[in-house]
Length: 342
Image (tube, rainbow, N blue to C red; front, side):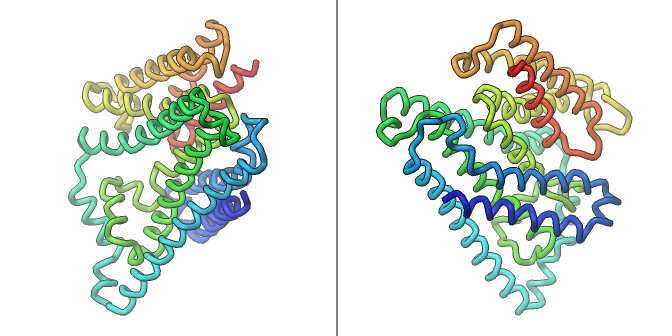
């Protein structure tokens, strides 16, 4: 029952690889090649690891319950793909039959209009960061919902526990989100005229440097996937650092930043410090609040917080050709996980 979801994400990986290699000259010139190859690899990881996610922390889950969870996720993803296929086919058919509509839906004109109206202010940046924070909200909301249903004895009646139920919801919504935005991105970058009007509104806030590549939300969510196999507190820390600490650094940098972090950079020292401090506090607070799922000593909590902070700051300081939406979750997450296992 897990096979349809595996095929979808392995297929996404292959299609993304083909797109990158077909446009490799442009990608290399714009320093996007490495970043996009990593996104294709993350899709492959999402597909290959999917069959092991729901039961990894729930060894007592029955095969019947597992098949139900896999089936629901597969049906959800397939329905989403079918809806997209119908919409894209319809828009493509209409545009090709009408030259005026085809000319109106030119991607270069669309980008010119965005760049002309784009304002790099606090409101615009906060809107972008809010979408990332919403991802984090979904994770903690479903985990809490699972805890409540488990404590009330409802989940055991279905042969489930907190981990399997919560991760089923988180993964299904997360995978659906990624499917939606990646098909939107691939259409935007290759056949823009096929994109429905409502989907074009997603991209009104993208910056000029993002207009020839995938939006940041997709690799951000994909980068969380390896940490589904770590204790939930580490998964939660990774999500909150990648969204919350990054948003704090951005807000402080925009509002209070007066000293540039490095030459030709829009990042500030004030935002840099705020991001590092936020990372440290996130690890300490989450490790205390969720101690039952990751029982470690106070000394190890501080070591984990320190390592995560150093890695977050290094990414912020040194990241160039690879998006920090990939590097931050992966480096801080594996750093936390390694310290936990020592």
